[in-house]
Image (cartoon, rainbow, N blue to C red):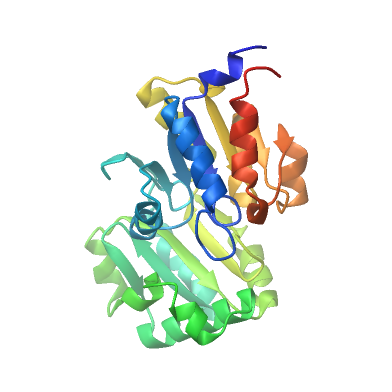
Length: 291
């Protein structure tokens, strides 16, 4: 087995709960491990539900460049932010999806290639998201706001849904959230009746709806084919259900110690949690000379 693992060319990592710690930053240990791997010729690929501006802000703070899977697989961009692959939500599915959330009284945001939108009062949606973050992560209002501009603070009001859809906005995802987790459970049950969509939760109080083809593992398969790699040259890292398709399709998969049980059971190896530099442990293990 000597030398086989040094063939790794892409390190594909989820962000929240994997590459990032509780403070939303890349730890010095993870950063150093990435830099060692990059020096050996590997590239970082982040795979996240986040949008591009948020990803670049975090990476720039750490002086890291990366390719990126965004919106849980709706976009694949290179280091220069050129969009190489997409899987946008079919506009015909927008109303059926948002009706479910409207009927249940769940707040939601629309992530599009050209900005962030809301069908309801942006101020109300923003406040609901801030309250959700405070409740979910146990942060004060000041701590929540100190993490920098969030999409909820940049929402554009959609006054006419039909006109919005006719303008052909490329919809990356619809993200819904509620402190009342039972409402999210009900929404998922109704979403399961729709065809043409995928829906995943990062936490029990949210659900993100994308096109059925917008999944991390699917777009990653297309990306490596486009850029001339094979699966054995890729390692993937994650912790949550939106990482499942990567773990299903790529043999060298690493689950964080804080990962969902199902993710751990699928993994090639389980490493330390995101607070204990699990990404660094996985990288250093893969780049060892002997196994």
